Image (cartoon, rainbow, N blue to C red; front, side, top):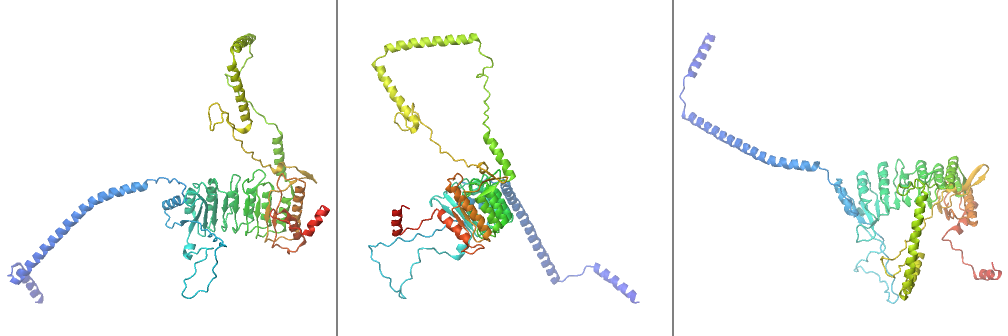
Length: 571
């Protein structure tokens, strides 16, 4: 029954739903409001859609213009920028190249500060006021003029200090100083372009700039392009590869190089010694080499002494504050006195002597066809030539006779003038270089002489010096060009002192004999603070010998009694 009643009720409900029911006013009003709301929403949606379409259209136009501009900018970016040509103004070139390289932090270029000049001495005529005790109300005194002060942050800020020959001329940079900040590959690329353009640059000082093997190799290439560079200082730059020898090759023009505190070991000393000289190559420009405060031992000192065997250019060598002992001092003493040639050096010596002894074989150039005579001249042609020359000689003699008859006083005057001109020409050809007419500047009919070029003394190869055979070995005189040797603060003992004393005595005997063809020998030798007491006999003897050889040595003034005794005795 329940199921039946449920089905009937469902059927009734279906039937009633199909029949339209009356709607109240409230329902009608709700339906109207709902329809209005939907209409408003549809309008708003249509407006939004229309706005989006307009925006899309506008964006499409703008996107077309922006896409065109973006394409143009992409094309501009794809184009390689024009290379910058340095003009010689270091500051302008440096800043422009740094901007092109994309460097955000660019160290400032400033002129190197100098100590202010001392004030002039007071005029004695002016009255000097006595200093008065300052009172609490008086102003503070002016800072002293012997030094300048700066902010500590500004002092330690990275900068590039330059020295100008003329302060008003920015292209007259002569020196550059960089200290205490890392010069990496980016900055080295900039210096590679702007430093060779500085024509007057002669000094580069890079102190503690963190050089590496790559930057050092690049710097050596830059140094070879600077034509007037003569002084290089790389103190405080330990490099793992120790490739400092690249700066003093055979074609290098560097005169002075400082490598203090670079942690150079025996490996670096070996490379530097080979750069100084070998049997076939030698450096001919380096005069000053400073290797203070490094890690050179006896092995490195032997390599340096081998470099001094054939080098006749280095004047000053400093290896102070290293670890050189007696073996290194012995090698240095041997190079200063005389040394035996090795087999390779003897072979090279024989080659040089043979090349010097052979006469110059001058091959005459092959004559041209017009100038050559491949066959001998026939007899008929010779006779015709003789006849023609005879006829010309007769005709010329007849013409001369006729001219001599017609000559008068005017011709004599002309001959006198010609004689005077010949004498003046002869005077000019003697080397005075003056013009015959007494006028300045080149003119027609004048004779000028070429300026005399100074004779350049050719450096004699040490292998060609006079040799002496002792016990089957060939000895040649040692290095007498080196005049200043500093080996202080090392580990040299008595055996090293003996070898050095022997070398100095040998040099003194050669100078007393008048043999100064290869130099005068050592003039200064620094040996203090080594492995011997300062009152050692050998050290005192070396000091006595070296005092008189010092170019700044002044003998003590004699007393009046000594002067009178010397005048009476004639000594």
